[in-house]
Image 1: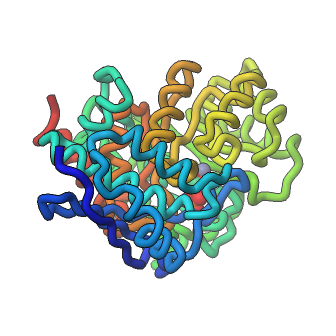
Image 2: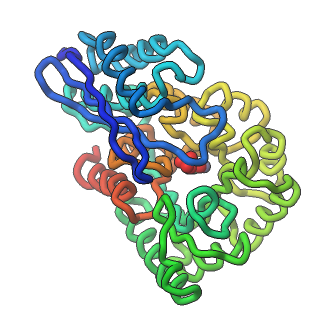
Length: 392
Ligand code: PGA
Ligand code: ZN
């Protein structure tokens, strides 16, 4: 065992030019392992709390570092347990979920390096996850709206989900449709329609809620991949003012006309029954996912299960604050029989942890935004690296 000797931290920028935190875990042999954490914009009220980057830095260097000195970095569960009790609050508001998660991820990297295995394999072992039949599918956010773009679209993310057996093939299909969509919107709406939102998707003005799907279908046809994609939507409905009835009617139309395959946060974060009514609607075969509803928190996930609100779930490590708790959330979701989709945040850094996490946990899907902007492509490229060089 090579113990932790110190942990330093520094403020770095995220993809929106806002300060976030990077932790640097140093072991007693002098090797150092970094990790930085993303930040959301459409943040659920029940997520773990972040503190300012300056406060996170002080928490890491003054409180966490002295306490973890001498600990074994391979012992992820014990270290995360220490972090949770050091903080002692239900939403990690004392030290900050951002401070805690940055350390937790850097420790996972150190542990994997000591064991001389890839990070995804280390996570698979920690979570006792079985080898899945297929790699995660890509949920590619090609059109941005809501809080992620200054356009007329009220829903946050229109997703293209390639059907393919490998990451590389999924990326080929997704990128071809994404590029064709750029050409299509430019032709329809002018050159400025190519401008992109926070997650790299195009962000033109559309006339109604369904027009983005018409555009995606046209682009998929042009790219020759009509039969190779499913369509998804993250409504992020906590940010939308509309009645349950009117939203339900819109989703029904999307399902009828475009075979909507995946639907995330169709209603507000407390509307358990509205979710359940949609999930129960026999005409709806769509996967109904919780994000702001469940916030990677097992208590919220239990309630969703009890109320039959969802059959799919988003897992974001920074909604809960430690690697171990995020792993537990995946295990809970799998046991519940839900579709599991690991996700980045809209304010990202170049840290590619989420790719290893999704792959290691055997998630059914991963949401990384569009294949544009360095902080998004870093994760796609990490998935490619895992598939090409580290598999088996
Ligand atoms: P956020 O959005 O990262 O801005 O919270 C992502 C999502 O709602 O899935
Ligand atoms: Zn979401």
